[in-house]
Image (cartoon, rainbow, N blue to C red; front, side, top):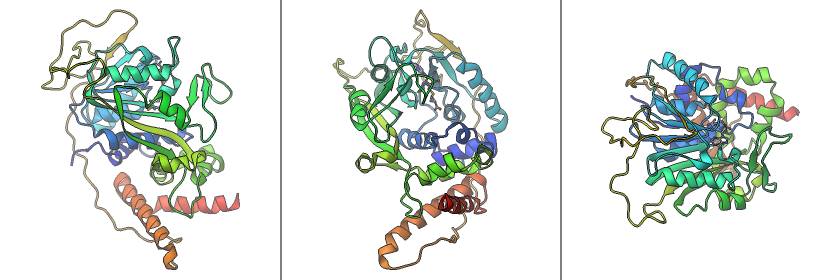
Length: 396
Ligand SMILES: C[S@@+](CC[C@H](N)C(=O)[O-])C[C@H]1O[C@@H](n2cnc3c(N)ncnc32)[C@H](O)[C@@H]1O
Protein backbone atom coordinates (compact mmCIF):
# COMPACT_ATOMS: atom_id res chain seq x y z
CA UNK A 1 0.00 0.00 0.00
CA UNK A 2 1.40 3.39 -0.95
CA UNK A 3 1.00 6.32 1.46
CA UNK A 4 -2.21 8.23 0.93
CA UNK A 5 -1.19 11.58 2.36
CA UNK A 6 -3.39 11.04 5.40
CA UNK A 7 -2.34 12.36 8.79
CA UNK A 8 -1.75 8.80 10.03
CA UNK A 9 0.64 8.29 7.14
CA UNK A 10 2.43 11.46 8.13
CA UNK A 11 2.94 10.09 11.65
CA UNK A 12 4.20 6.83 10.26
CA UNK A 13 6.59 8.69 7.99
CA UNK A 14 7.83 10.78 10.92
CA UNK A 15 8.49 7.65 12.95
CA UNK A 16 10.28 6.01 10.04
CA UNK A 17 12.62 8.99 9.81
CA UNK A 18 13.17 9.83 13.48
CA UNK A 19 12.37 6.64 15.37
CA UNK A 20 11.21 7.52 18.89
CA UNK A 21 13.16 10.81 18.98
CA UNK A 22 10.49 12.92 17.32
CA UNK A 23 11.53 16.56 17.02
CA UNK A 24 8.07 18.19 16.94
CA UNK A 25 7.06 17.34 20.53
CA UNK A 26 10.30 18.84 21.79
CA UNK A 27 10.23 22.21 20.00
CA UNK A 28 6.45 22.60 19.98
CA UNK A 29 5.75 23.18 23.66
CA UNK A 30 2.25 24.44 22.85
CA UNK A 31 1.42 21.12 21.17
CA UNK A 32 -0.22 22.66 18.13
CA UNK A 33 1.84 21.53 15.16
CA UNK A 34 0.34 18.06 14.87
CA UNK A 35 -3.17 19.52 14.87
CA UNK A 36 -2.20 21.98 12.18
CA UNK A 37 -0.72 19.25 9.98
CA UNK A 38 -3.74 17.06 10.64
CA UNK A 39 -6.03 19.82 9.40
CA UNK A 40 -3.85 20.43 6.32
CA UNK A 41 -3.81 16.70 5.49
CA UNK A 42 -7.58 16.46 5.83
CA UNK A 43 -8.44 19.59 3.88
CA UNK A 44 -5.94 19.48 1.05
CA UNK A 45 -6.02 15.80 -0.03
CA UNK A 46 -2.55 16.10 -1.54
CA UNK A 47 -1.86 14.57 -4.91
CA UNK A 48 1.64 13.91 -6.28
CA UNK A 49 1.01 16.18 -9.27
CA UNK A 50 -0.05 19.16 -7.12
CA UNK A 51 2.01 22.34 -7.33
CA UNK A 52 2.36 23.07 -3.62
CA UNK A 53 3.59 26.21 -1.90
CA UNK A 54 4.63 26.39 1.77
CA UNK A 55 4.65 29.99 2.97
CA UNK A 56 7.01 30.64 5.90
CA UNK A 57 8.20 27.06 5.62
CA UNK A 58 11.14 27.16 8.05
CA UNK A 59 12.63 23.64 8.24
CA UNK A 60 9.37 21.86 8.90
CA UNK A 61 8.89 18.15 8.52
CA UNK A 62 5.57 18.42 6.74
CA UNK A 63 7.12 19.94 3.61
CA UNK A 64 9.51 16.97 3.56
CA UNK A 65 6.53 14.64 3.85
CA UNK A 66 4.94 16.30 0.82
CA UNK A 67 8.17 15.74 -1.10
CA UNK A 68 8.20 12.14 0.12
CA UNK A 69 4.67 11.74 -1.29
CA UNK A 70 6.05 12.67 -4.72
CA UNK A 71 5.35 16.40 -4.89
CA UNK A 72 8.07 18.96 -5.46
CA UNK A 73 6.91 21.60 -2.99
CA UNK A 74 8.18 25.16 -3.04
CA UNK A 75 9.17 26.50 0.37
CA UNK A 76 9.21 30.28 0.78
CA UNK A 77 10.79 31.92 3.79
CA UNK A 78 12.18 35.35 4.51
CA UNK A 79 15.16 33.73 6.14
CA UNK A 80 17.62 32.25 3.57
CA UNK A 81 19.40 30.33 6.34
CA UNK A 82 16.43 27.96 6.38
CA UNK A 83 17.53 26.35 3.13
CA UNK A 84 20.71 24.53 4.20
CA UNK A 85 18.90 23.15 7.23
CA UNK A 86 16.00 22.00 5.10
CA UNK A 87 18.41 20.29 2.72
CA UNK A 88 20.13 18.53 5.60
CA UNK A 89 16.77 17.26 6.82
CA UNK A 90 15.82 16.20 3.29
CA UNK A 91 19.00 14.13 3.16
CA UNK A 92 18.02 12.52 6.47
CA UNK A 93 14.62 11.60 5.04
CA UNK A 94 16.23 10.18 1.91
CA UNK A 95 18.51 7.97 4.00
CA UNK A 96 15.67 6.75 6.23
CA UNK A 97 13.10 6.11 3.51
CA UNK A 98 15.19 5.25 0.46
CA UNK A 99 13.27 7.81 -1.57
CA UNK A 100 14.66 10.69 -3.54
CA UNK A 101 13.07 14.03 -2.69
CA UNK A 102 12.62 17.15 -4.76
CA UNK A 103 12.10 20.47 -2.99
CA UNK A 104 12.47 24.04 -4.19
CA UNK A 105 13.19 26.98 -1.94
CA UNK A 106 12.87 30.67 -2.43
CA UNK A 107 13.99 33.33 0.07
CA UNK A 108 11.27 35.95 -0.25
CA UNK A 109 9.00 38.24 1.67
CA UNK A 110 5.61 36.54 1.53
CA UNK A 111 3.81 39.86 1.99
CA UNK A 112 5.04 40.83 -1.49
CA UNK A 113 5.20 37.36 -2.97
CA UNK A 114 6.97 37.42 -6.31
CA UNK A 115 5.63 34.26 -7.96
CA UNK A 116 3.58 33.85 -11.14
CA UNK A 117 -0.14 34.45 -10.65
CA UNK A 118 -2.49 31.46 -10.68
CA UNK A 119 0.39 28.98 -10.50
CA UNK A 120 -0.28 27.07 -7.27
CA UNK A 121 -2.76 24.23 -6.68
CA UNK A 122 -2.41 24.05 -2.91
CA UNK A 123 -0.71 26.22 -0.34
CA UNK A 124 0.02 25.95 3.35
CA UNK A 125 1.00 28.70 5.77
CA UNK A 126 1.41 26.94 9.11
CA UNK A 127 1.91 29.27 12.07
CA UNK A 128 3.77 31.72 9.86
CA UNK A 129 1.46 34.54 8.76
CA UNK A 130 1.18 35.87 12.32
CA UNK A 131 4.93 36.64 12.12
CA UNK A 132 4.69 38.63 8.89
CA UNK A 133 5.01 42.41 9.20
CA UNK A 134 5.91 45.03 6.61
CA UNK A 135 5.98 48.79 6.04
CA UNK A 136 3.29 48.70 3.35
CA UNK A 137 0.41 47.72 5.63
CA UNK A 138 -0.79 44.76 7.70
CA UNK A 139 1.66 41.99 6.79
CA UNK A 140 -0.84 39.24 7.53
CA UNK A 141 -3.45 40.72 5.19
CA UNK A 142 -0.82 41.29 2.50
CA UNK A 143 0.38 37.69 2.80
CA UNK A 144 -3.20 36.48 2.37
CA UNK A 145 -3.54 38.75 -0.67
CA UNK A 146 -0.31 37.19 -2.03
CA UNK A 147 -1.84 33.75 -1.58
CA UNK A 148 -4.98 34.86 -3.40
CA UNK A 149 -2.90 36.03 -6.33
CA UNK A 150 -0.70 32.93 -6.74
CA UNK A 151 -3.43 30.30 -6.24
CA UNK A 152 -5.10 28.92 -9.32
CA UNK A 153 -8.86 29.47 -9.46
CA UNK A 154 -10.29 26.68 -7.31
CA UNK A 155 -6.89 26.27 -5.61
CA UNK A 156 -6.86 25.69 -1.85
CA UNK A 157 -4.84 27.13 1.02
CA UNK A 158 -4.61 26.10 4.64
CA UNK A 159 -3.61 28.96 6.93
CA UNK A 160 -3.15 28.56 10.67
CA UNK A 161 -2.58 31.33 13.21
CA UNK A 162 -2.47 31.41 17.02
CA UNK A 163 -5.48 32.62 18.99
CA UNK A 164 -5.31 34.82 22.08
CA UNK A 165 -7.08 32.21 24.30
CA UNK A 166 -9.79 34.68 25.22
CA UNK A 167 -7.51 37.72 25.61
CA UNK A 168 -7.64 40.82 23.37
CA UNK A 169 -5.93 40.88 19.97
CA UNK A 170 -2.17 41.17 20.46
CA UNK A 171 0.07 42.63 17.76
CA UNK A 172 3.75 42.90 18.55
CA UNK A 173 5.93 44.10 15.63
CA UNK A 174 9.32 43.75 17.36
CA UNK A 175 8.87 41.04 19.96
CA UNK A 176 8.44 41.07 23.72
CA UNK A 177 8.99 38.90 26.78
CA UNK A 178 6.73 36.18 25.33
CA UNK A 179 8.31 35.89 21.89
CA UNK A 180 11.58 37.43 20.71
CA UNK A 181 10.31 38.16 17.21
CA UNK A 182 7.24 39.85 15.74
CA UNK A 183 3.94 38.06 16.21
CA UNK A 184 0.19 38.37 16.64
CA UNK A 185 -2.43 36.54 18.67
CA UNK A 186 -5.87 36.69 17.09
CA UNK A 187 -9.41 37.00 18.35
CA UNK A 188 -12.35 35.69 16.30
CA UNK A 189 -12.98 39.28 15.16
CA UNK A 190 -9.44 40.04 13.99
CA UNK A 191 -9.26 36.60 12.39
CA UNK A 192 -12.33 37.57 10.39
CA UNK A 193 -10.89 40.95 9.46
CA UNK A 194 -7.31 39.97 8.61
CA UNK A 195 -7.49 36.36 7.37
CA UNK A 196 -11.05 35.48 6.32
CA UNK A 197 -12.11 38.57 4.38
CA UNK A 198 -9.91 38.51 1.27
CA UNK A 199 -12.42 39.06 -1.55
CA UNK A 200 -10.87 36.48 -3.91
CA UNK A 201 -10.80 33.71 -1.30
CA UNK A 202 -13.82 31.93 0.08
CA UNK A 203 -13.72 30.17 3.44
CA UNK A 204 -14.11 26.42 2.96
CA UNK A 205 -13.70 25.59 6.63
CA UNK A 206 -12.79 27.28 9.87
CA UNK A 207 -11.86 25.15 12.86
CA UNK A 208 -10.13 25.72 16.16
CA UNK A 209 -7.53 23.62 17.89
CA UNK A 210 -8.61 23.39 21.50
CA UNK A 211 -6.82 22.05 24.55
CA UNK A 212 -9.78 19.91 25.51
CA UNK A 213 -11.22 16.48 24.94
CA UNK A 214 -14.69 14.92 24.92
CA UNK A 215 -13.42 12.44 27.53
CA UNK A 216 -14.85 13.73 30.85
CA UNK A 217 -12.01 12.16 32.83
CA UNK A 218 -9.66 14.73 31.37
CA UNK A 219 -10.84 18.33 31.92
CA UNK A 220 -9.96 21.12 29.43
CA UNK A 221 -6.27 22.11 29.37
CA UNK A 222 -5.52 18.98 31.36
CA UNK A 223 -3.10 17.22 29.08
CA UNK A 224 -1.51 20.46 27.90
CA UNK A 225 -0.65 21.36 31.50
CA UNK A 226 0.50 17.84 32.20
CA UNK A 227 2.84 17.93 29.22
CA UNK A 228 4.10 21.48 29.69
CA UNK A 229 4.17 21.89 33.48
CA UNK A 230 4.35 18.46 35.10
CA UNK A 231 6.76 16.59 32.86
CA UNK A 232 10.42 17.45 32.99
CA UNK A 233 12.25 18.15 29.75
CA UNK A 234 13.89 14.73 29.97
CA UNK A 235 10.49 13.07 30.39
CA UNK A 236 9.08 14.99 27.44
CA UNK A 237 11.97 13.73 25.35
CA UNK A 238 11.44 10.20 26.62
CA UNK A 239 7.76 10.26 25.69
CA UNK A 240 8.10 12.21 22.49
CA UNK A 241 7.03 9.09 20.57
CA UNK A 242 3.62 9.12 22.28
CA UNK A 243 2.94 12.83 21.90
CA UNK A 244 1.40 12.84 18.40
CA UNK A 245 -1.05 10.13 19.42
CA UNK A 246 -1.94 11.86 22.66
CA UNK A 247 -2.29 15.20 20.96
CA UNK A 248 -4.77 13.75 18.51
CA UNK A 249 -6.97 12.98 21.53
CA UNK A 250 -6.26 15.96 23.76
CA UNK A 251 -6.06 18.69 21.16
CA UNK A 252 -9.09 18.16 18.94
CA UNK A 253 -10.28 20.32 16.09
CA UNK A 254 -13.56 21.91 17.13
CA UNK A 255 -16.17 24.02 15.35
CA UNK A 256 -15.96 27.81 15.77
CA UNK A 257 -19.33 27.95 17.52
CA UNK A 258 -18.08 25.47 20.11
CA UNK A 259 -14.81 27.37 20.46
CA UNK A 260 -16.62 30.68 20.98
CA UNK A 261 -18.13 29.35 24.20
CA UNK A 262 -14.73 28.41 25.66
CA UNK A 263 -12.18 30.64 23.98
CA UNK A 264 -9.73 30.17 26.87
CA UNK A 265 -9.06 26.63 25.58
CA UNK A 266 -8.67 27.71 21.95
CA UNK A 267 -5.08 27.92 20.91
CA UNK A 268 -5.04 28.04 17.13
CA UNK A 269 -7.32 28.92 14.24
CA UNK A 270 -7.30 26.50 11.33
CA UNK A 271 -8.55 27.99 8.08
CA UNK A 272 -9.06 26.46 4.67
CA UNK A 273 -9.53 29.00 1.87
CA UNK A 274 -10.40 28.47 -1.77
CA UNK A 275 -9.57 30.84 -4.61
CA UNK A 276 -12.82 31.86 -6.22
CA UNK A 277 -13.27 30.60 -9.75
CA UNK A 278 -13.99 34.17 -10.86
CA UNK A 279 -11.66 36.33 -8.82
CA UNK A 280 -12.43 40.02 -8.59
CA UNK A 281 -10.83 41.90 -11.49
CA UNK A 282 -10.74 38.86 -13.80
CA UNK A 283 -13.59 38.72 -16.28
CA UNK A 284 -13.16 35.05 -17.17
CA UNK A 285 -11.20 32.10 -15.82
CA UNK A 286 -7.89 31.68 -17.69
CA UNK A 287 -7.82 28.77 -20.11
CA UNK A 288 -4.17 27.91 -19.47
CA UNK A 289 -3.33 28.22 -15.84
CA UNK A 290 0.14 26.70 -15.49
CA UNK A 291 2.81 29.37 -15.75
CA UNK A 292 5.70 27.85 -13.81
CA UNK A 293 9.34 28.57 -14.41
CA UNK A 294 11.42 25.56 -15.28
CA UNK A 295 15.05 26.15 -14.37
CA UNK A 296 16.12 26.78 -11.70
CA UNK A 297 12.40 26.73 -11.19
CA UNK A 298 9.97 28.09 -8.70
CA UNK A 299 7.71 25.14 -8.63
CA UNK A 300 7.79 21.55 -9.63
CA UNK A 301 8.27 19.82 -12.92
CA UNK A 302 5.84 16.94 -12.60
CA UNK A 303 5.43 14.77 -15.70
CA UNK A 304 2.80 16.03 -18.09
CA UNK A 305 2.88 19.63 -16.91
CA UNK A 306 3.34 22.60 -19.18
CA UNK A 307 5.88 25.21 -18.17
CA UNK A 308 6.36 28.72 -19.40
CA UNK A 309 9.88 29.75 -20.34
CA UNK A 310 9.42 33.30 -19.10
CA UNK A 311 12.51 34.60 -17.29
CA UNK A 312 12.76 34.68 -13.55
CA UNK A 313 11.99 38.08 -12.10
CA UNK A 314 14.94 40.30 -11.32
CA UNK A 315 15.64 41.52 -7.83
CA UNK A 316 15.93 40.24 -4.32
CA UNK A 317 14.53 36.79 -4.94
CA UNK A 318 16.86 33.88 -4.28
CA UNK A 319 15.75 30.64 -5.89
CA UNK A 320 17.22 27.23 -5.26
CA UNK A 321 16.37 23.81 -6.53
CA UNK A 322 17.28 20.92 -4.33
CA UNK A 323 17.70 18.60 -7.31
CA UNK A 324 17.54 15.67 -4.95
CA UNK A 325 16.31 13.33 -7.66
CA UNK A 326 13.11 11.60 -8.64
CA UNK A 327 10.82 10.02 -6.09
CA UNK A 328 10.43 6.28 -6.08
CA UNK A 329 7.26 4.44 -5.19
CA UNK A 330 8.13 2.48 -2.07
CA UNK A 331 5.01 0.94 -0.55
CA UNK A 332 4.41 1.19 3.18
CA UNK A 333 2.86 -2.03 4.53
CA UNK A 334 -0.16 -1.67 6.78
CA UNK A 335 0.08 -3.59 10.06
CA UNK A 336 -2.82 -5.76 11.05
CA UNK A 337 -5.22 -3.94 13.36
CA UNK A 338 -5.85 -5.41 16.81
CA UNK A 339 -9.08 -4.95 18.63
CA UNK A 340 -8.93 -2.43 21.48
CA UNK A 341 -8.61 -3.71 25.02
CA UNK A 342 -10.56 -2.03 27.81
CA UNK A 343 -8.35 0.02 30.09
CA UNK A 344 -8.54 0.29 33.86
CA UNK A 345 -10.67 3.43 33.96
CA UNK A 346 -13.38 2.19 31.60
CA UNK A 347 -16.62 3.72 32.78
CA UNK A 348 -19.60 1.60 33.77
CA UNK A 349 -22.81 3.12 35.00
CA UNK A 350 -26.31 4.30 34.26
CA UNK A 351 -27.77 5.47 30.99
CA UNK A 352 -26.83 9.06 31.66
CA UNK A 353 -23.20 7.97 31.35
CA UNK A 354 -23.71 6.12 28.10
CA UNK A 355 -22.88 9.04 25.84
CA UNK A 356 -19.69 9.77 27.76
CA UNK A 357 -18.78 6.13 27.62
CA UNK A 358 -19.28 5.96 23.87
CA UNK A 359 -17.10 9.02 23.40
CA UNK A 360 -14.41 7.50 25.60
CA UNK A 361 -14.54 4.24 23.69
CA UNK A 362 -14.22 6.12 20.40
CA UNK A 363 -11.14 7.90 21.73
CA UNK A 364 -9.64 4.68 23.03
CA UNK A 365 -10.21 3.04 19.68
CA UNK A 366 -8.48 5.91 17.95
CA UNK A 367 -5.48 5.69 20.30
CA UNK A 368 -5.19 1.95 19.74
CA UNK A 369 -5.54 2.34 15.98
CA UNK A 370 -2.91 5.03 15.82
CA UNK A 371 -0.49 3.24 18.11
CA UNK A 372 -0.91 0.08 16.07
CA UNK A 373 -0.51 1.89 12.78
CA UNK A 374 2.40 4.11 13.69
CA UNK A 375 4.35 1.68 15.84
CA UNK A 376 3.39 -1.50 14.04
CA UNK A 377 2.14 -3.05 17.29
CA UNK A 378 -0.18 -2.07 20.13
CA UNK A 379 1.41 -2.51 23.53
CA UNK A 380 -0.90 -0.17 25.43
CA UNK A 381 2.00 2.14 26.15
CA UNK A 382 0.05 5.28 25.28
CA UNK A 383 -2.78 4.40 27.66
CA UNK A 384 -0.28 3.71 30.40
CA UNK A 385 1.12 7.18 29.92
CA UNK A 386 -2.38 8.65 30.06
CA UNK A 387 -3.06 6.81 33.31
CA UNK A 388 0.19 8.14 34.66
CA UNK A 389 -0.96 11.63 33.65
CA UNK A 390 -4.14 11.00 35.57
CA UNK A 391 -2.27 10.06 38.72
CA UNK A 392 0.19 12.94 38.46
CA UNK A 393 -2.50 15.52 37.78
CA UNK A 394 -4.55 14.18 40.64
CA UNK A 395 -1.65 14.93 42.95
CA UNK A 396 -0.83 18.36 41.55
C1 LIG B 1 7.06 29.62 13.22
S1 LIG B 1 7.92 29.58 11.73
C2 LIG B 1 6.94 28.62 10.65
C3 LIG B 1 6.80 27.20 11.03
C4 LIG B 1 6.61 26.25 9.88
N1 LIG B 1 5.66 26.73 8.90
C5 LIG B 1 6.18 24.86 10.38
O1 LIG B 1 5.32 24.22 9.75
O2 LIG B 1 6.76 24.39 11.37
C6 LIG B 1 7.66 31.17 11.00
C7 LIG B 1 8.50 31.38 9.76
O3 LIG B 1 7.97 32.51 9.05
C8 LIG B 1 9.07 33.16 8.44
N2 LIG B 1 8.67 34.53 8.08
C9 LIG B 1 8.45 35.59 8.91
N3 LIG B 1 8.10 36.65 8.18
C10 LIG B 1 8.08 36.28 6.88
C11 LIG B 1 7.78 36.94 5.67
N4 LIG B 1 7.44 38.23 5.65
N5 LIG B 1 7.88 36.24 4.52
C12 LIG B 1 8.24 34.92 4.54
N6 LIG B 1 8.53 34.25 5.65
C13 LIG B 1 8.45 34.91 6.82
C14 LIG B 1 10.16 33.10 9.48
O4 LIG B 1 11.44 33.29 8.92
C15 LIG B 1 9.95 31.70 10.06
O5 LIG B 1 10.80 30.76 9.44
